[in-house]
Amino acid sequence: MKTAHKSLYEDVQVQFNKAADLMKLNSGIRNILSETANEIVVHFPVKMDDGKIEMFTGYRVQHNNILGPYKGGLRYHPSVDLDDAKALATWMTWKTALAGLPYGGAKGGIHIDPAKYSQNELERITRRFTYALGNNIGPEYDIPAPDVNTGPQTMAWILDTYLTTRSQGERNNCLHVVTGKPLNCGGTLGRDRATGFGVVTNINEWAKSNKLDLTKATFIVQGFGNVGSWSAHFMKEKGSKLLAVEDVSGIIYSASGIDPDDLIEFAKKNGGKITGFPNTVAITHKEFLSTKADIFIPAALSNQITIETAPLLNVKLVAEGANGPTSPEADTILQQRDIGLIPDVLCNSGGVIGSYFEWLQNKRSEYWELDEVIEKVRKKVVEAYTNVSKTAASYKTDLRTAAYIVAISRLESAYKERGIFP
Ligand code: NAD
Image (cartoon, rainbow, N blue to C red; front, side, top):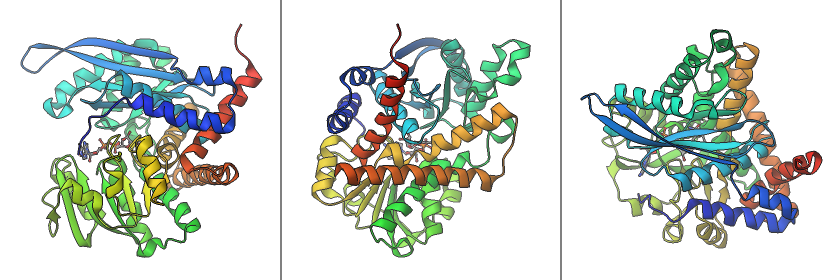
């Protein structure tokens, strides 16, 4: 799968301008939302296992915080750069506003291929990155979370490093500096599955209004990490059949279906990789994208559905588990081909909604039951889906533009009510 692309931030601007034109957004507020608030780039040294010192570059872009603290994930990947972080931070502003959360948008990460480093090195890299970010993150200011190649362990290291730099009296008030933590470090039940659960909740809503019977549906998934694997698990619960999966190690296909839960267990024992799963055959990337199925869930990286690949898809619905998998040109092709699309800012919002409930529990020193968390996530996702589909109908537009309109309207109201200092 190709990951090179033109500017992702330009794609975000194209999507934003389309919605802003349609909703006749106030021009001053349009100027504000067209820019990121802060772009932090840090270069920091880390001692490797062999004693040598290597320099790393990390990013944190904070797009907007009119509705609440900046919120968004940290990604460890060679594709991480300022442009990607700006795009991903802006999407977080739309996502949190759309979900009705008291948050703004941020994103960041380290330009690194984590597969090349030992666990001890990754711990030191994470701790030095956290130290370098200093007061640019904080439980009421900017709250990171997991993203590609980061997870609960990464969050635990960030938490520990952040707390170590606080005064003794402050430490217990700072557990919510990151979300997506392991349970014993203040994490919540359900955060692990929240994004995938939200993806499938959205698919379920779309299926109801488009008369797609999920008990007979087939689907394919790109990326089998947190989002892809949990999405596949919940699709299985709906009775749908998984035909093909692509991850960084390759692609597997089975016409009779792949059991997502067995594949999760297999991948756990296989360094996270899916290739070699029994009773499947290897297919090419082009064959994967052309697989006839009802639903495609991209759950890996951005810019996968492009002007070149959109014509290949043989599905009824694209449900964007990943952030930014579809370019604006590909959006147009999918619309012309009558392929439905649930946009990232809506489709994967279960993750940040789950994070919000973790943050609330930390602030209140509470632990909630799994069912309670999942039901709260479901309610918020359905509410967002309903708002978006009503807005799409009233503006006669696609779900992505409608999602932007709902989100941007909330931000516009806040700016109009508060005004601009001085
Ligand atoms: P992850 O690191 O857990 O998994 C990433 C998956 O993508 C892995 O299976 C990996 O093999 C695969 N992948 C990486 N490079 C690939 C390539 N070149 N070709 C094919 N597959 C490749 O990451 P994740 O947390 O599941 O995130 C996946 C996507 O979902 C990202 O776009 C992320 O921004 C988005 N997202 C994640 C969350 C969350 O809660 N984790 C929330 C919202 C959105």
